[in-house]
Image 1 (spheres, helix red, strand yellow):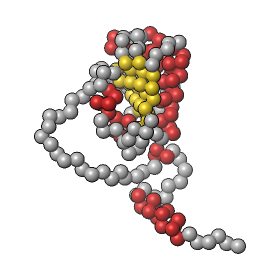
Image 2: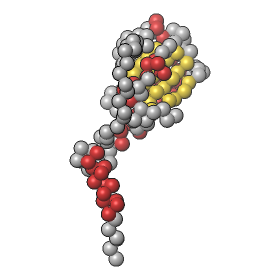
Image 3: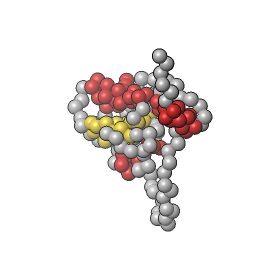
Image 4: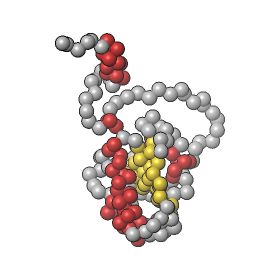
Length: 171
């Protein structure tokens, strides 16, 4: 016997297809699926511009020197590239008071754990915060940072914060 026609399921599929720019979504990384995030516009104010909380340069994991003086005594932030764009208050909530390194495990074809191990091992790092996105491919940055911490032989406080694709802290 043939399965019953499910009109509601067909309509939901059409709605998802329209939200994806008319393309049917099949497989692949959920983080790569296109979608629009609707937000109410914030009222414009005459307040002073927000100041960057960045404390050093460069910020890319691959470009940062292992023995940079700014690592000594640092609270280290290792963040996924997308996190700062997804989370509106990123500088104030995460970068302030920390040395920041960023990377994308999906786009950078490299294992960050070796370099991060050396940074943690060779410097007096006080704490480690890892900020990642909720998408599965972003687990690579968490894995690299945790592996580096384990391989460094040091015991320092650490935490992982996960950001949703619509900009909320979920963990």
